[in-house]
Length: 120
Image (cartoon, rainbow, N blue to C red; front, side, top):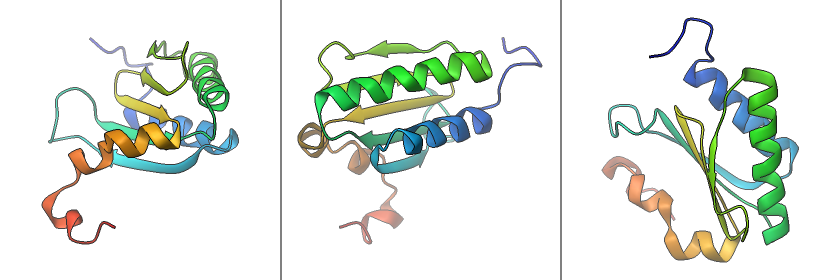
């Protein structure tokens, strides 16, 4: 299904992390999913300070992935900007407003038992 010239999940992950950092996303968390889920190899969760920033972070991310790596993403939630889901195939990205992120607590859902003892 994947052509030899397509970006690897590691390349996509690196591009996502750089884009989020460039756009001043906050509290960026990377969760490895390989072996835990068939849906993707990685999940990235980040916050924006406002609905406008969340939507802008998501828009710039999808533009950069398309321009730099030829990766077309599926995006949901950008119209409202509380929680934007970006599906790049191998990497799933969630960008939240802080209050929405706190409410859903996705990080806790994907923690391994070993990590849960050290989590705040």
